[in-house]
Image (cartoon, rainbow, N blue to C red; front, side, top):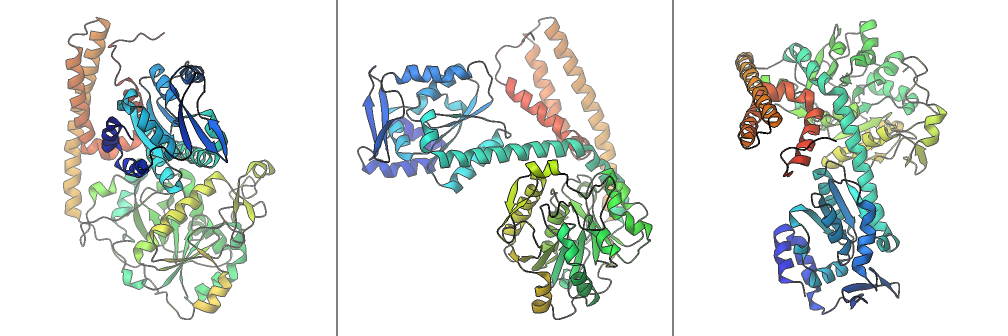
Length: 584
């Protein structure tokens, strides 16, 4: 029977697990486990696997065994640990005695073993203030969801400690956890690199692009969405398989059978073939992004409207010859602060993503399209090529070298075969699949020959779609000819407010620097009795800085990586009792 203390603990931290394990109460002893006394008198645990008994801990001295096991972790410092395999918890207890400041979570795949632990050992023997999460059972969805929470709280940095016997008998569950951890660490690394690379550019672009944003129509607010209801839209990406679809796309364009949205570099291949899409789309914040649509400027093509993300590289918009429309991207913290629309209080935004295809997919769903077709969305390497013909940025950029191909991961293509891809393509694919899943009302067809299998889509050749589904003209000419409808008076009011906030921020920063100097002085003088007051004053100033509108919209986004690093350092010293630690 579960100990009363353990019931009370689980009632506070995880009622779901408590309810699950209470169902085992009807059995005096779980069927496949035995709790027996070891040679030293403490309990040990036997579990039956495939008709044979296996000790989870030593049958002689479980405590000594746990001590030996955790010695390998003595000389390292850990912020977050996940124990896979709890058993009777000897190793967890010993580890936490050595590392009392480490946050820890527990995954016990066997509910009967966990029930046995709760019936004989008190959770209060562990430092509960450091216990973050408990997972038990073998349900993949439940494991993944709870592990995602653990990894998120740990900022993707976690040490995994596996009780050795579990590697042999719970391989599937451990493999699932290790895959999730690896994916999370990759995502975190990618996120940090992306933020570090673009954190300043996003804000600088948003500021420089603001006059263009102010004077161009918002694609989500100023365009009549009734034009698109029940109509098909085609997202044309730059993958190598686009080479096989030029004539099909030409036919669709000439007969106005669907709205064609070119994303990223695909515009170069289309224009080379004399095909003008209904819009070109761009959002990349890099300064070299202008090269993607430079062909339109060089040829002075005025017939192709440009849909741009508000944080796109500002160089992209200079001297664009045609009509422009914008979408407010989530990385833009300037426009939402300054803009208010005449006809709605909600300024719709689009989430940033690793691919322009994912961004435009969101836009098309918001516009009301319920039939979206993907073309050239390979998300994989085909014939050693990155892009379709007609796209080349010099230095043989369209060719994938053999060195990359040798180590490239494999994924399934639309025919069920393996195809080589990249980690970047995989992240794009996962993001696209996520948004497709979030819009079940939209039918998504993938026409990309030899492209990666995209969950949530149906593969169908584009020629077949034309023959079976495209019967009528649906594209309205000049659909993009609308005006901007932002409130100028609101903008003036916000700009005035930001000027005042900037002045307040400067004073707060000066106060903060003053308190830091006083703290440093008191540390140098070993004056520790009054130092706490200075910390309190500094904390109050920091909170006011974080609440300041100018800081939160202009400064904070440009130092997000450094800020996150500072927060992590603060957390690591938060519970340090020594007021002064001398660096060795």
